[in-house]
Amino acid sequence: MNKKIIIGSRGSKLALLYAQIAKDKILDNLNLNDEDVEIKAIITKGDQIKNIRLSESGGKGLFSTNIEKELQDKKIDIAVHALKDLPYIETKGLITDTFLKRNDPREILITTNKKKLKDLKINAIIGTSSYRREFQIKNIRKDIKCKLVRGNVDTRIKKLNEGLYDAIILSYAGIKCLKLINQVSEIFSVENIIPSVGQGIIALQCRENDDKIIPILKKVNHNETYKKAHAERNILKVLEGDCETAIGAHSKIIGEKIIIEAELFSLDGTQRFYEKKTGKINEFRKLGNELGQILKNKSKNSYKR
Image 1 (cartoon, helix red, strand yellow):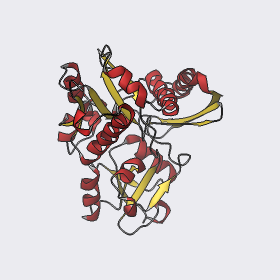
Image 2 (cartoon, helix red, strand yellow):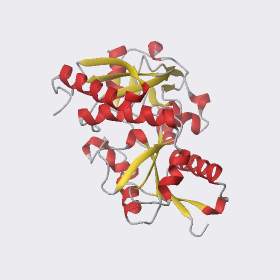
Image 3 (cartoon, helix red, strand yellow):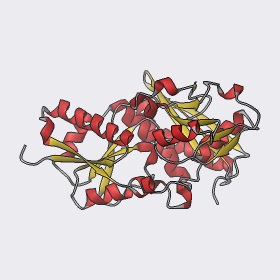
Image 4 (cartoon, helix red, strand yellow):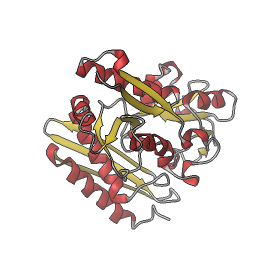
């Protein structure tokens, strides 16, 4: 190649593993050599904020803004994101329209003694930084106390082992990628705990007018995941969801049908609104929009400040 393709990623161990997956996909599909594609680690504001909720310091964009700036400035060619961390509004001049095959979207519980949620002591403390996870867990067990935990996966497990929490909740996709499955105490079905919008999906972003990179990304796009990603993201767009929005959404494709279910909690977590829709697979965007509107109407904006 005349010029290296540079992939930008957060610098965490998990993010760099996701970037490597993206690099491998590109190498496999374009018959390139390893040295033709380079991964560049970029520090984000979200990685630097350790002790407060993201919603108190700028929201989801904290994990993507610095990376997107490098993309806009042509210092990188492709940005790799965990889709669940991306704001629903696309950054000017950029396009996020490529998705790798979805990893396991389920949530998992880690405890020090392999106890399941139902077996934890009364008023047990669970570590999470997500309002969605907090409200979902309390919907199952009202006595549970949730306490903020931030940091990468290793940091969170370390805090658990230090006795700061009785359990922590994490995404299964990350745990699998980090080869930490032996730490898992319980795996929640997507019916019991509906995951975050886009959970388990690696998204690839580029400049909207980059005629060199766009054809490359089209070759690595996973069509089924593409439909699921846009269906779920459209729910988020209709709700204008941010870090404070406790919204879970999950879609599956069976034959020529797409099935989407979603739940939304009021701002204080006391009200839960649920909806499930099935439609033709080629109507995935429309279905997401409709489901989002139904939840918005049901909730009467009780999920917003």
